[in-house]
Length: 220
Image (cartoon, rainbow, N blue to C red; front, side, top):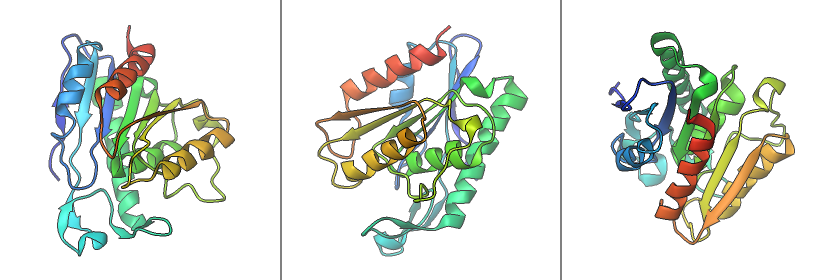
């Protein structure tokens, strides 16, 4: 497995953001964004993991960096659940490494993910990780594992979430992102929604909002 890209802060790290890229990208994809955010978060480490390269069914079986296989696009995403679980365990391993090797309280660890990476962090935070978290950033993403019987355990309900989505997104439709938001809101999770006049991408005003949200939770 490729080692994650780790961006150390200027000061001693007392918080961490673990940020997952999207389908077909790599661990360097959000490096410029992380470096920009770190200017406002001088004691926050950024960990940018790399998805394994594996075949993706909707792309004709071509191998590319992916957190899980997407088997079909409609009417809703059909995914390889075993690969989703493997990716969730990767994220849990990164949380535990920050806690056990670096002394970072998980309550000061934020999980962030774009598109497919966002689906993994939502699954990890609300269905797999058992302890506290500092929050979740869900960028242009959806929640394929939030089923009709989806329920958030009491220990996870305090985890704040910021969902960010483009109103012109034709890859992950806005309605898919909104459904993930609504599922969390129905479980009394403190979740916020913000949308932007953009496609399946990240833009400056969104990064500014992310920065402010992180500062409110992680700055000391």
